[in-house]
Image 1 (cartoon, rainbow, N blue to C red):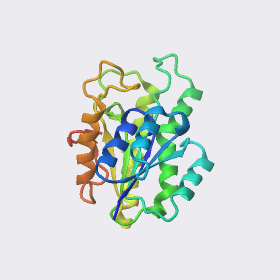
Image 2 (tube, helix red, strand yellow):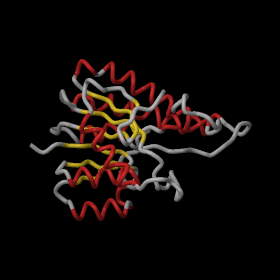
Image 3 (tube, rainbow, N blue to C red):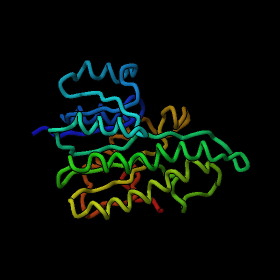
Length: 229
């Protein structure tokens, strides 16, 4: 039986690479992003895998679009949900932080993944897996440079969300991984990053493969190493 994965933020970078590698493994992929009709690389991938890849318009902050995704998936079971959509927000230093930008980033990075899981969890059978794409910048123990108030706090909060979700969904047999992709060459990571997206996602695919009740709720690097909170 073909397994199904849902990927948010699938139009570029890590989300697009997740789609590629899950397709290589034979999964049915639902690739979600705000404007799939203009996502050129995703559309090219769809042409190559027209029977296995479906695109779905999704702004993760819009309730109606989250419900539309659930309706689109009726009759399917979700084996893996990849909460990848995220934004960095404005790069501001202390003295320049404003609440409006902070709230915008929190809505996308922290709140939307919870609301999306709540929307889709009834389609997730025992043994299914949820991946929250976080960042080592959300580690309080690892913060040795300060700054990045908005992004750091959104990911630290997402880590807390993932830990609670792991506890709350354990009785349903659903496991949760809180994953750092490494410093990756993407639009967000920039050109000076250390690894490419294929290396990152290859490592994360192995992390997902090993995910189960015994390690649900852990903060994990793309290479499988645990990250301090």
